[in-house]
Every structure is written in structure tokens, then in C-alpha cells.
Image (cartoon, rainbow, N blue to C red; front, side):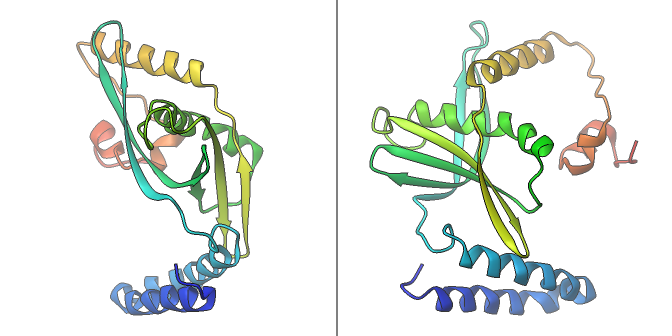
Amino acid sequence: LSENPDLDRNRVLGILDTLIPCYGEAGREAAIIARGLVLSYTASPLGKSEPWQIEAEVNVKFEGNGRPFFVRGFADRVDRSDNEVSIIDFKTRKYSAEAHAGYSDQLALYRIAASRGVLGELGCLSFSRSFIAYLTYDDVKIVEIEPDLPSFEANIEATVAAIRSETVWRPVSGSACEDCGFSVLCHGAFSGT
């Protein structure tokens, strides 16, 4: 970020303008929404501050009844102030309480990573908080989320134990599959069922 938010915003919009022609009519249609997202973000407190980390990769080791495994994720943005870290995940949708609750496990992984020193030096971060930033073309709404860390850890260990005990994989299709980049591995080409 520079000292001039208008310069930053114009730089990002300029990059967007160079990408639009690459995608034809779909690019021109998406550009309307993308411009709104850029303008909303750069006008928000997040757009006016420098992040500590962006797309921070976390690989968290769990014990799994003596058979360790790792869970990997990417925290969109991590801010640090003194001994506090704020983990922020972005969603390009309006806030809804139901959807917000559904993001708890994702943020639980990042919070566990912070507590174990994966996001910075072990012991230097005494407290972490987690937020979802709902980014729309006309607003950025930042909502705190408090994940249940022990429940997440128990669920992830139970899931891995169940996977390890299976001899035949039988994936179940559902609405969550529509947004999953791995659905093709489970169901072939996604059929919408």
C-alpha cells in the first residue's frame, strides 16, 4: 500500500482494466461487480491498512490416535498488533447468520494454527481473534466469529479416523458440492444432484 489510497485504488482498477478484454463479454459483465468490490474494499478500514500476512498458508498437525495427519488451509488476511493477531477471511456475499455460522470450522483451523505458532513465533501471539469480511459491491461488513476449537479438533480427528477405516470410498453428494473444487474427484463431472 502506498500513502495515497486513491493511487492504490486506481492501480488495482488499472490492472482490472487490462484483464477484462481477456475474458470477452463475460469479463465485461464481471468487471461491473469487480469494480464495485475494489471500490468497497479500498474505502473500508481493511483497504486502508497494511496486512501482516496475505494468503497465509497453514499446515496444522493433529495427532489422530497416534497416527498424525496435517490439515492445510490459507488464511486470506492476517493482521498483527502488539501480541494480538486478527485472522480475516473474505466472502463475496452479503452477511447472513446461517452462512456465518457455517464458516466456523474454517476459522477454527486458522485459530489453532495461530495458537501453535504457525502464524508467527510460538508464544509471541497471546491472543487471536477471527473475523469474516463480507465484501459486496457497495459495502464491507466485518463480523467476528468465535469458533469452537475443541469441537473442531474432535470432529477433524473423527473424520480422519473414519476415512482411514474405510476400505471403499462412498462420497455423498449434496448442496455443498456445488461450490467445491474437488467435487469432480468425488462424483466425476458435477451433475447438480
